[in-house]
Structures are given as structure tokens and as C-alpha cells.
Amino acid sequence: MSIRAGCRHSGRAFGVWAFYTKPMALRIKQLREARGWTQEVLAARSGMSRSQLAMIERETRPANTIRLNAIAGALGVSTEDLFESNPRERALLELIRLLPSEDVEALIRVAEGLAAKSQA
Image 1 (cartoon, rainbow, N blue to C red):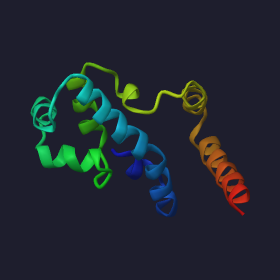
Image 2 (tube, one colour):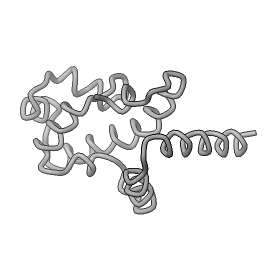
Image 3 (tube, helix red, strand yellow):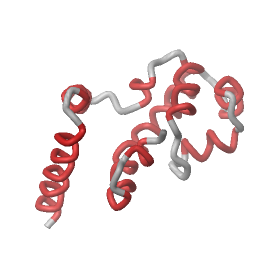
Image 4 (cartoon, one colour):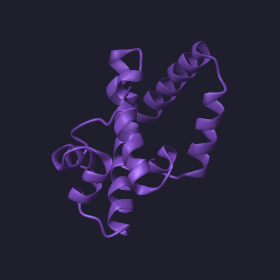
């Protein structure tokens, strides 16, 4: 299941996906290039086509967990390592994982309210 599909409220799905996509896409590209690999090499090692990988790196196609696991495995990193490694964000994600789903939904509503307030 992709992060986008994992969000129950379709109105929020794009916002959640957009939050993760850019750092993840950039991180995949950075890790690939650090190994001196082309998209073809990583795609082959991940069991997908080069065009699928290119769309993930360009942020035009969401990557489901199966593809993320395959990419991470090919790169020799954890799936978590594909996301931006900001210690505060990782700590927040760890706390969120401990919450029951209804509390996560409440937290999303609070965060959306704070974000809207800061953009006003």
C-alpha cells in the first residue's frame, strides 16, 4: 500500500503523499548515484522497469510499499532510510507509530489546522 493509498481521507491523500514524495525521490536518486548506478541498474536490481523508477524519482508516480522495499533492498538500506533523515521528523514518526488510529486521525486534524493557520 502506498502512503497515498494508506490515508483514509481522499481529500488529504495528496497532501500526505506530497509531504513524503520529494525527500524520498531525492534520497533514492542520491543513494543510487552514490553507488555509481544508472536508473537501469537500480531498476533491474529492484525488479521494475527503468521507466517505473524514473517516474518515482521524478515524483510523477507514487511508490507502493512493495516497490519501496525492493528499492531499499537493492540499495542495501532500510525502507526508512529512503525518507529524509531529519532526526526530529524521525522522532515524531516513532511517536506517531505508538498511537492508536483514532489518535493519529486527531493528530492529522490538529496538524492541518496549524498548517492552515501558518499559511494564512
